[in-house]
Length: 480
Image (cartoon, rainbow, N blue to C red):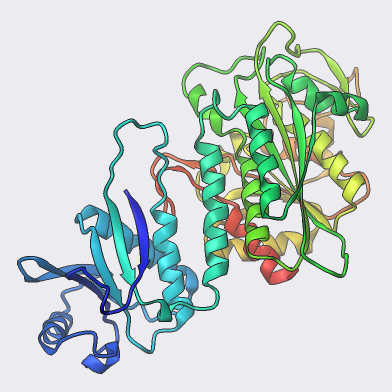
């Protein structure tokens, strides 16, 4: 069931049902006379009786075939709070099977508040039903007066498209969205003004990206590094860089994962999907920045040519890595992608995203992403932004004392900490070794955030799209 927004005037509106913001309304003129005296009288009587009882959205039946939905205005200036209220409104309509309704706001409502309310409803209404043969054909038609919307609506629409693009990618099964298909889909982003460059296996071998290539060598599918560039700043400033792990399916390789829940490993490419959705958002809203997204796309399979525990590979940086566990593969993909990004683009900062460790879920659950950072200012900006959009992060330490847990007797480093403890920290400490020129860098471990069995305030169950809104707001507030 999806949400369809219809921009209608009074003459075209065919719905009998009405929804009203009623927090401060007291007379028909508050609604530009779009409410009759009898309806208003019933609403005010209901309000006076304190019948909301903590609920923000309720309905009263005025007539047999006409439903009145009351949205109690939360009297907040927070766009996030109105987004959450909009999401509750969608859930209310869905639960009560109200398929056609006109939303009427008081004339003094701020346009950005109204737009945020609609944005929240749209975020919550996402569903992925591409492979269902019997689809629910019913849409919820929400009829609105376009004059209520703010000038920010186009920007919010770009964010919605970016988030849903990320959700679509994460929701696809591994047999459909393998690295070959993924690279093809990203190439199509050039149609909206992004410059997309695909480095295939032949090019990656020549470049020396052996850490990334080692992960994918057991699969019949190709391995790729894809760059997505957006140039929206005429001053030719250094780009902002975002790097994503794109393991399209992760069996663990020869270090095979347990069978239980392995089907969830279709979302092990969520970090790359966030980067793709973010870059699409930048292009659609014509962001006044220069930015680059870099994603490593592989499939980790236990084939006859698969990487073995004990193998040693030479990374793009020149540093050598002993592979002790082939299921610690995401950091190998990111190792090459990080050094490549720093060397080629010389960015202001690098932020990478990855469903990197199960340990971060043990530590933080599904409420915060793990943040690791070599720059206090960058860390503080990300933490502050996360609270603004309810995509929260929590900083964990990086320290040279953890390096000894990743040092190898046979190579420059090993890819896993077998001593025990600090699994997420040592994974981040491993990644930090591939930032060679002290570029400000942050690593977001989103293993607990990318996919939800139960849904959240602004997302249904399944792929959440976590990270797109966080990084868009972070850029908007600090670099645009």
